[in-house]
Image (cartoon, rainbow, N blue to C red; front, top):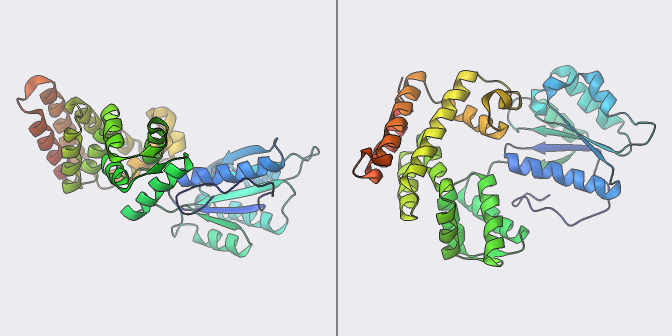
Length: 331
């Protein structure tokens, strides 16, 4: 695993260090870091078992049991996901493993990288944990580097124009960018250019609709309007943009009413994946119930407008986007 876009290192038969710390909030890169540790372990022992837990699912004694050698010398990768949430006794058990690691057993602690649980992360570093950074790619240049590395990872290349077009069309979500880049490389014979991206997104219109919605619920007025204009230029059907806008607002309402629980536990009751819940939990903090009510009304109206009630669907969408952006500050 590398820090320049998540491209795995070359295969090796060397076992990974027994104590690993994966730091950062970029879920895709965190998952790839864990997968790389598991891959390296299975290169040594193909029967290596993967066990994943949240701190709320473990007691110190249970963790010690998972980290103890078995009679059959079973290799294991034990992941404590969100270790920054660990209580003191569990954090102490995590640290204690660094003093007496067992052969063939790797403990991976993932940490969001913020102030919460910072002492545990610092102590793990002092214990000699191998650290992998998986920070959010906040700058446009970082996301461009990620797209280029994804193209190489898929066995292809991508032009500067294509990178720019893809970022404008998809936005900043790395899962979307990774999926789109891989598919483009496969569809284009290995070399991706600007026209290929435009053709691709005419066939994947929903992604640009969600880009509009993401920016609107985030309160990014200029970004949402720019994404909307781009979607319409690409020939995205207005009904797809309207549906994406409605879905984003409904998701905020559902997640907001569910409270600030563990996304993994809420996934079943809300009927959506944990990453989507986690993303909405971050967004909904800026919303109030009155604003959500206004946004829900606006998206209901635009859905009717684009299905025939309005003479100009593009104008109706622009009006709805502005209504959602403004509703974010209501209440």
